[in-house]
Amino acid sequence: MKTVIVLGGYGNFGKRVVTALVEDADVHLIIAGRSLSKAQALVDNLRESAKATLTAWQVDIFSSDFEVQLQQQAPFLVIHTGGPFQGQGHRVPQACIDAHAHYIDLADDRQFVCDISELNTRAKANDVLVVSGASSVPGLSSAVIEHFQTMFKSISTIDIAIAPGNKAERGLATIAAILSYTGHPFQVFKGGQWQPAYGWMDAKVNDFGDIAKKRGLANVDVPDLLIFPERYKVTERVSFQAGLELPILHWGMVAMAKLAKHGVIKNWAPYAKTISALSEYLLPFGTDIGAMEVRICGIGHDKSGKNAVWRLYAPDGQGPYIPTLSAIIIAKKLLTDKAYERGAMPCVGLFTLSDFDTYFNAFGIYASEEVMPC
Image (tube, rainbow, N blue to C red; front, side, top):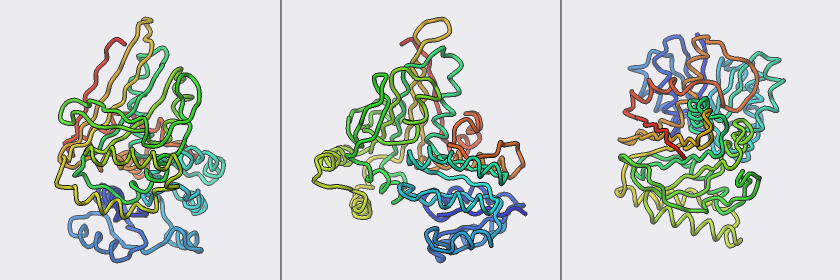
C-alpha cells in the first residue's frame, strides 16, 4: 500500500484532490494540515464510501521538526495544496526529496514554480519526481498550447485569461496570493521585450462567449509569464489576466491596485480575511459559471497568419476543480507506475490535453476550440 499525504487536505483545493484519490484501494491517504478537527471531519465524511485507507494528521509545515515528522510517515507521494506559496521557500519539496517521496504542488507563484528546477540534481539523485505548478497554470495552460503548437511555424502572442464565477467556492490562500502583488510590478514579455506590468491593472472586458459572456480582466502574475516566452519561442507577447465576475468587486480591485502602486497601501495581503468576509455578502449575486481562455496567434506552416482560441466553461460551481486536475493526473500516473522522468521541474509537458477529458466530462466542464486567420 502506497502512502499519499495531501497537505492542506481539507482546504478548498485539497479536499478536491482527496476526493479524487479515495477510490484507490491500494492507497493510504493522509489528510494533513494544522487543524486536526478539520482533517478528521473530512476523514469521517469520506470513510464510508472510500476504498482508500484514510487517516487525519495534524502537522505544520513551518514547525522546526517538520522534516522528521514527514519521514516518520514514510510517504510515497506528497501533494502540497497549502498556499499561498509566495514566500514559502522550498522547504517542503526539499523535505520530500530527503524522505525519498515524490512531490506535487498547486503553486501559482512565479518564483516558487520556476525556481523548483534548483532541486533537480537532488531529486534525480533520490529517484523522485518533483513537480511545481500542477494547476490551471502552468499545468493546463501549457497542455492547451502544446495541443495547438504543431500547427504553428512560429508563435507571436499567447494570451491567457481565467474568470471564476462569483458564486464558486474560493479559498483564502488564493485571495491572499493575488492581493500580495496587487498594484505591484512584475516583469512581462510584451512588444518583444521584458518590461514591467502591475498586478490587477491594465483592466479590460473580455467576451468569453457561450454561458460565461463578458467578464472584466486585469493583470495577474503567474509562472507562465516567465516560462512560456522561451519555451514556445514567442516573438511578441505573453499575457495572463484574471477577473472577478461582479463589476463592483473587479473594479474595486483595480482601485486597490492603484492605491498600492502609489504607496498608499504597501501590501493588501494582510487584509485578505477582511476582504474575503466582505465579499461573502455579495455571494447571492452573479453566477457559479467559470471560464478560461487561451488565445495563440502566429504564423502557420503555410506562412499564413493563424489564431487558435480555446475556451473552457465550468458551470454549476465546478470551476474550483480545474486547478486540481493537473496534480490529480500526475498523482494517478505515479500511483499506477506510469513512466515519469525523475527530477524537479515546473508542470509543463508532463501530460496532454486529452488527459483532462475524463475529468471534464465527470464534472460537466466543456471546452470549445476555433482556428481562424489573424
